[in-house]
Image (cartoon, rainbow, N blue to C red):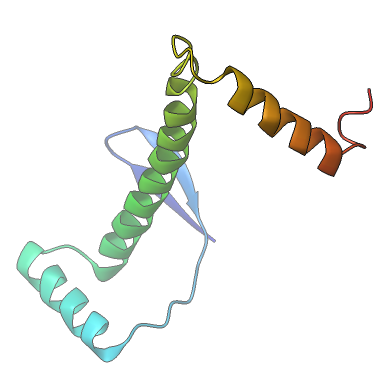
Length: 101
């Protein structure tokens, strides 16, 4: 376990060691980027992990927001009555245990 003082946040952060296997091309690219930027390979790997975490959190949020945005999408359609009723009847017959209450 390593303790690092984060200058920007002014917080003490606990870091855990993780072993990572990289392909040869990944290792070569990582070395090249580290050399060009003057940053440590470990810093670049942590930045990549942070980006993946952020993307995943945004993806989950975007999915939930997209679902919320569909609410009321067809509220003004007048041709859905019988179709919607037939779908509900079929679901009720197939899944009686779900609709028994």
